[in-house]
Image 1 (cartoon, rainbow, N blue to C red):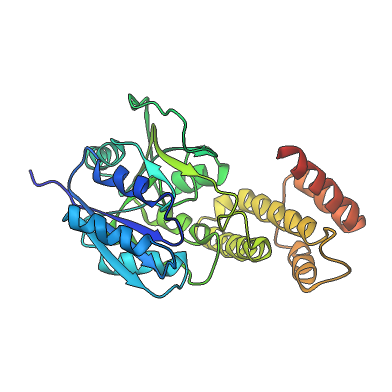
Image 2: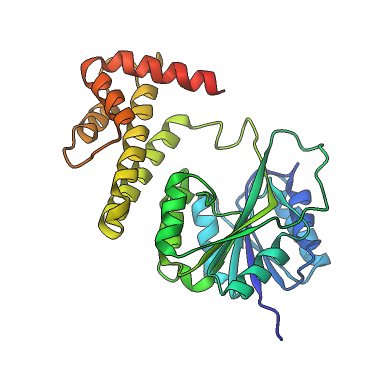
Length: 320
């Protein structure tokens, strides 16, 4: 039987210290039928040359050099040229287990799944020992509404695109939003909704490296605004398409709004600003019904907004 081709899209920008490890984790996969698409997003360092050098060593590697437009557009370029029956994403400062794609594709074919997701591990250091003899402990199947419910509960199905494979048809009318941060937030729930069957693998396959100077550590204001807009869009989508999940989504949206209000009430911002005005408007919507805990927080916010902001900021500090 012909092996299914997986197109793996890797957006690349200013990661020359980490890029080789990422690419080697792809070329050394036990599953060999890969199309590895490296998108050099106008990186000013040596990333472009590293990509070209690897492409000379492995015919499965396709390199695209383009002007810098951001992570979302780099992924979109990859989607536009991908030939695989399945699509995967890997961030260029991360790396993956040698059996990740073999386990994902075998599960997809066995269960006739349109999305298969595995566990991931957050790493703050690169020189640590990771178990090679990883094995699949269990699998869990979901239809589209079950997948969305699990995703909103934050149990197994994560919002990032990179620890999964997808049937390419799911992206027929979906692309990443250009110019946004937290771009995965804008599309993952739509993909879960479109997927007739999603399978979760209890297998640690993806290694997510957190850098202090990554986009997760910079541009905080733009990130918060992107998360707010993405969560607002997600709230509207869930309410319109899966109304039985509205209450859960109301809680998520309210919690996001309160955290954003706390952020824009920090010492960095003084007085009333445009973000607080927008958040106020959303928090006073009558169609949003929150849980008891959220209602208490919302009541506190409406009576003592600055006290609410201070408490949330203190709680966030304790988590760190």
